[in-house]
Image (cartoon, rainbow, N blue to C red; front, side, top):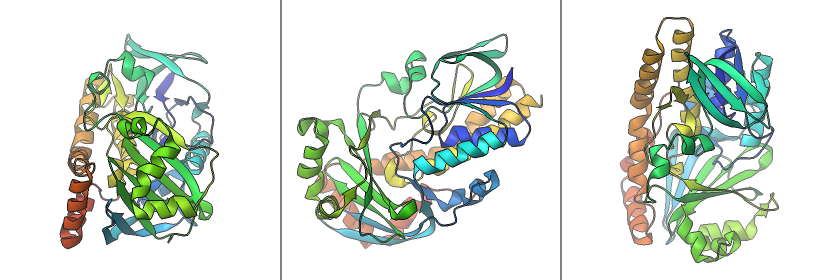
Length: 372
């Protein structure tokens, strides 16, 4: 019998496991992959997470600190802006592995290469079925990312929705070596998508872009052809692709990404990170939201396990606190996302942002939080 079972070992799941273990609770975490592994992710973390990560036992010494932003439009208009709070870069390959080690040192039982097939609450105890056997826990949390087999089993609303402007996206990521200032993050726009580049550890860079499935279809389902014929129409991206050394034999990719609204609780399972709601990557704050969400969940789970709150109160309080903290960010992210797609609209919007620096500052402020 575990106090908490956590499905998924990304930032939200690992952070939550450490927080609960630090309080003396018995925690088990299931991860379908084996650490360390790469993920499709922009790998930029807002400085609002620095104190939190240090409280877990992770420091950012030696990592590139990012304080400047560049945004370009498909027609080549360039906007530059100073990031008041800023952030830092680190690969998920490195960060998740280090957090996993911290979790294990704190007593968390971590099962790698372990997929969860079902989870059911019976007589106030969760029965968790996995490829490593069946387990029981008082609390269960879903930290399984953008889309999983459990989303389909639960028939969650975003899975059933017809593709629209906030769904059916694909994400592509490389690690590269290139000439680019380590203190800067850039966001280069192209038809129906945008590509971010920022520094990570060991003088490497993360190059990650989001686009719709239609762009890939129009390119004969060839990523290389799409990058040559669509992305490279932005002169800045053309230069990056021509002058950079790709460090993967082939890029990482993920499909069926949705930014539609999601619930925070399903069948009494608390949902965290991208499973609870995904902010558009152009806002650059999904990793911090995952960790902050874990802190909110840990507080409510602790109250339940210490019998200071009922299960219903834990679920309702967590959902409400998560909503109060993140809903305005998600709403702003969805609003801004609609301005990035058609070239003419994107070109106009970036010219407007360049002419009105207060607008850029407003958007950054509305999509980020304070240190937590």
